[in-house]
Length: 358
Length: 254
Ligand SMILES: Nc1ncnc2c1ncn2[C@@H]1O[C@H](COP(=O)(O)OP(=O)(O)O)[C@@H](O)[C@H]1O
Ligand SMILES: [Mg+2]
Image 1: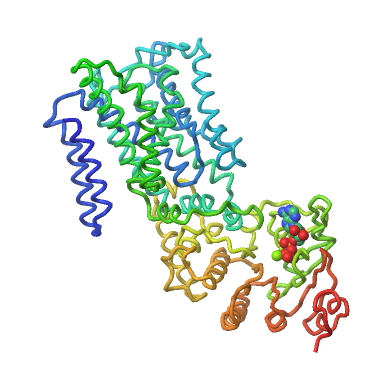
Image 2: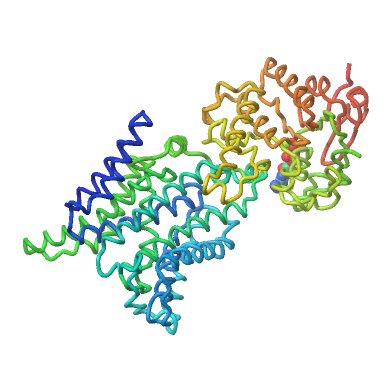
């Protein structure tokens, strides 16, 4: 049953991006939106919404990272740090930890702002770095942040993290243990994220991002303040992750440092690579495919294996499986499943490294 | 008051003196050329003007303000635009988008406007697109506006770089070897285009190797050799200058 959601969503996006008529495209997306909103009338299995809400969080993360990597061309391998910052914001300010119980809705804003702030703080030292060097430094930050949360035991509960986080409530109705309300929250946040990402792409700032991605020196000659423009990419990208972190923590009612390891950053980058870096629909498809593999296919494979008496834990091979998927993509469709026209062209004419001289 | 004034600008790279005490004055509304053999330091002077290289010594004053310690983006916003000796377009953006990026400094949209597409932002975007189309038409590229910059023919890429540079409504346009690789017909069109640019009120400083083009177009010429200014004057004066004949032209002018 759960497969239907993923496959239908993926199919609708892929088809909608192929149909030539704008009207048909809008109709397809409207139908998908309506179906997702109304699904709970038919499907009353809350565990489906549990999986879907997690998938939604990852779609949100991928949309955010796409701003940094896809739009501005800044390869960030430590994106999970901002996810952790969002989650710990909720963990520390809506739990018995300090006896502070701020509302979920307020903390969404707080976490988005804090993550953006840390996006700037961690982005600032990397401004002069490019390519591999940038990737390595951001990777380091991605490792440091969960370590800090782990070591600040007095505030964060150390390796055990913080548990028994508050249930959010909506006009006096507590979310309780159910996943369904989170499903709706992630749908709303994805709708918001899609609208903002699309607006940004078609704007002065979005063009400036593309320009620095193509040729930073030429971009400066256009009057683009590359420092400001890069920091705004880091900040905006991180804020999506902050939102995702709050939802994730609230739904799990737990935060702990091991939830935000390097794997999470790699997973999100893989979603972009798989779907098509820079292209919003592609990124959505990439994140749906990988969450489908991760949270549906692998657990079911495990169940199947043990049913026939085998003792293999397929989930422990997930890295191997992402690796295989990425190698496959690189070999057969390096621009991703649903790339932007731009990306496809770029890879077709792999360019020589840029001359730093004018 | 000159629009641009270089006062004894020196730029060294290690032991190499790429520009040695170069002075230059450009009046508003002029077309001025800079000539000299390869490696003379011409592009280095452009890079010093646009803030890519901080001069080792000397001052650069533009429009009454010192700019030699300003970052490139501020110099661009203050009204200096340029093209590059090796074309540097945004390869995988359409010709139209290239010109729209060129308008960046003129636009007022803030972060909020870009995020939320406020009515002011929408109006500005429409106007930006409209102006970009006009500029593409001005350089003769209106029919290629949706093509990726890298897929344009070479001559069109040079024109697109000019359109992109004009998009910020600069006071001064720096052209680094704009006729390089062009055939005589294209060069002829380029001369007309540069005159039309000047007639829009833009002052032009160009580096060029084609003597015919320089003599036809420039009102004043500065000659560099080994990083030093060896002559400055009208085309007729420069043509007669013995230093120039010796160092650059190699033979007496007709
Ligand atoms: N970034 C740089 N680093 C080292 N040397 C440079 C650099 N830029 C230019 N040069 C050197 O400075 C000299 C002048 O170069 P350039 O200004 O490009 O000459 P022109 O444009 O007149 O042909 C050359 O010898 C060149 O190799
Ligand atoms: Mg040169």
